[in-house]
Image (cartoon, rainbow, N blue to C red; front, side):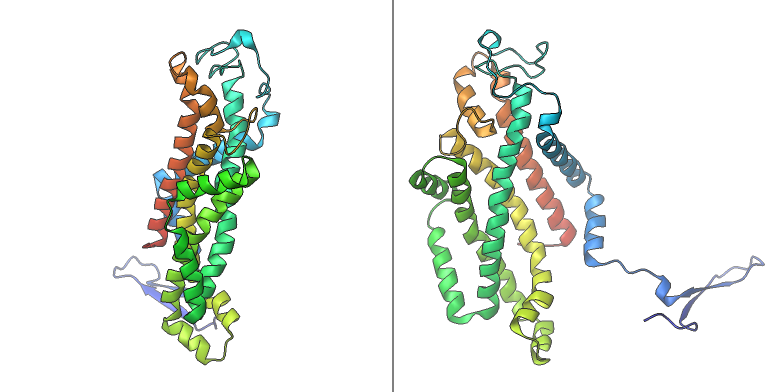
Length: 310
C-alpha cells in the first residue's frame, strides 16, 4: 500500500541558515533491505571472503573454458619432455612424468575435481535436508527412525566410510560420487533436524499452526527460510571436505582413472618423481589445498555474515 500524502517524516535541524529548517520525506521512500541483502553487504565487506570467492571463480572459469584457452592437449604425451621444470619455454608449469603439460592438466583437472567436490554435497543437501526437515518438524517415531539410521553412519569416520563404499562398488567416477554422497547425507540430516527442531518451538510457528496453516505450508514459508542459513554454511564446509575425499579416492585408485586429468590422480602419478621434480610434483596438492581452503574461508565469512552458530 502506498503511503498517504500526510504520511511523512519531518527532519528539523538545530541551526539557522536562512534556509528551510525541515525536510519532509515520505515514509514509503525509505527502502528496507531484506535479510539476504544485508547478508550480501556484510559478505562483500569481508576482504578474505571476497578474495577467496574471486579465486574460486577464476579456477572454475578457467576449468569451464579450458577447451577455448588454447592450451595443449592434457593427455598428449611426449617422452622427450619428461619432468621439465617450472618456467620451461612453452610449459610455464613444467611437464609430468609422461611429458604432458602441467598447466593444461591442472586447469582441465579442475573440472573433475570441482565437480566431485560440489555435486555430492548438492545431492546430499537435497536428500539429507529433506529428511532432516521431516524428522525435525514431525518428530515422534518418524524422528526416531530417521535419526537412529543416521546414527549408524556416525560409527565410521567419513573417509573410511567413503573408501569402504567406493571399494565395494568398484573404481570409477560415478561410484566415487555415490560414495561421497552417501557419506554426507547423515551429517546434513543431523544439522537440519537440529535446527528444524528449534524452529518448531518458536512462537511464529505456533501462531501459524493456530491459524490453520498446513504442515507443508508452515515448513515452506516459516521454517525453510530460517533453516537455510545454517545448512548453507555447513554445506560450504562439506565442499572442501568433499574435494579432499574425492582426491584421496583418486589417489588410491578408487576415483578417476588414467589418463583423466584430476588433481588426486595427478598426485598419485607424480609421487615417484618427487625427488626428481619436487616443485612440479606438489602442484596438484597445492591446487587441492587452495580450493579447499577457499571454501573453508568462505564458510567462515558466511557464518559471520549470517550470524550462524552451529
